[in-house]
Length: 354
Image (cartoon, rainbow, N blue to C red):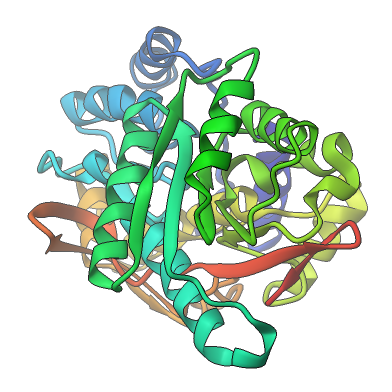
C-alpha cells in the first residue's frame, strides 16, 4: 500500500493541492495487527496531529483503529475494508468507500445467475454454491451472505468450509469442498491463503465448474506469479481493472512500479481525491479548515462521474456519496451504498473483464 500512496501523493501534487497548499501524507504501518494499529493511530493523531486518516487494509484492524479515530473526532475513510459491521456502530467520523461484504456477494451471485441464463448452449447451469473462507468475522460474513443470497436467488447452499487464517495446510478443507461438489465455489482469501488454496486444489484434483473469488488476495501482485496457469478460469469480483476506466493513471502506475493497479490501489487513489475535494470545498467557502468541518463536508459530499476539476471516478460506478441505509437488519452509516463490482476472469495470465 505504501508504494501506491506515493503515486497518489504525486497525483494530488500535480492537481495543485488545496489552494496551492500541498497535501502531506504521513504513514503508519499497522503490520496487520490490532495492537500495532491502535498504537500507530494514536501516534498519528496525538503526535503528528493529522487532520484525517485513510485505512486500514484488514477489516479487523479497521474495526479497532476506527474506534480510536472516533474517540479523537478525526475523520477516517476506509478505502478497502469490507466487513459489514464496520459502519454499523453509528460512528460520526468514520466513512467507508469500499463495497461491503454484502455488496461483493450480491454482485457475485448475480453474475452466476446471469451466466446461467446467458447461453444455455454453454451447459453452464448454476444451481448450488458453497463457500471457502477464513474463520475471521470477515470470512463468516462471506458465508452468511452467500447463504442469504443463495436462498433469495433459489440456489442450494451446500455449505461452508472455514479455516484459520494463515493456515499451513488446506488439504482437509479442499477434500471437504470436493465432497460438497457445488456448481459454483465462492472464495474469500487473503493472498497467502489464496495461493495455498489454489495449489492444494490442483494437488487434490479438485476443479469446480465455476470458482469465483472476492478480489482480496486474488488481485494482489504476488498471487498470479505464485500460481501461474493454475489461476486460469478463476473469476473474481474486483473494484478496478486496468483498461476499463482510469487508463491514464493506471498506465502511469504500471510504468512506475511494474505492476498493474488493482482494486485496492484504485480505491486508495479515489479516497485521496475525496479528501482533496472536501478540503477544497472548505477552502473555497472561506471558513476554518478543521476536523469537525471536514467531517461535515464528507457527510454532505456527492460526486458524480468525476471530481471537480480532476479525475473521473475510476471505479466501476459513477456516484460517490456517504449515506445512511439498512439492509437485512444491518445498519450502514456513512457508507457509499452506490458501490458495485466488476467481474473478471484469469485468462492466459491476465485478468479480463467478462
